[in-house]
Length: 249
Figure 1 (cartoon, one colour):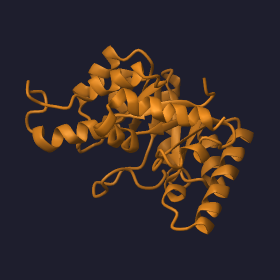
Figure 2 (tube, one colour; figure 1 turned 30 degrees about the vertical axis):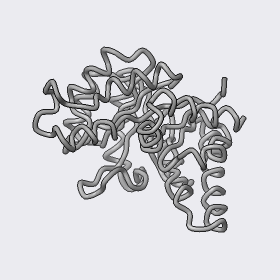
Figure 3 (spheres, helix red, strand yellow; figure 1 turned 180 degrees about the horizontal axis):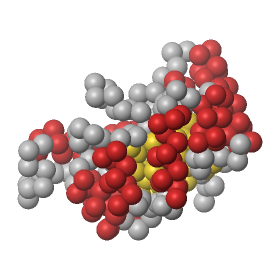
């Protein structure tokens, strides 16, 4: 088995459901079921399930989280913004992991990392409260030393490095620059005794390189796996990704 764990994000399974059943998502005809997708991902070897409870509830709903908490057997990684309502839900639900992310209403999905430098004072009480409740806290940040340093000072357990700029590089020169940023951020995080996760834009083509990041603990992947599952099913899609991660060792 690879040392790098795979967390599967099921948000876009819920996105597909909401596209048709936004006003009746708990109805008997509502499909696809994100919890069924999560269970299939676990069966295929996923080390955890990731879900983002957004303020506007555009995909994952509160009841989805409750069902995940009741049914999955690995761990729940809750992505969330630093908002009192969502923090309260997290403290009641107590997922094993929480990843604090930025959130803008106009974006389709999370774009860019959380600014731990400018939002330090607002983040500190939340990180402290979550950790005191026994939850492992990660900060979704761009691969920048200042952000790594701020995450460490906040008392986070992990950083999740935003790999979007690397994944979307327009040419090999840009890709090389972005890869260097990721490597240096991972090394800095390790020196600060932070765990290193990564996510965003990771797919079946770039996974072998991303999986070679130094000190990498976990990759969180959603869109690419859900997209692949349309053609081969969730279990096969997860197994294929795991095989590529393992091949990168």
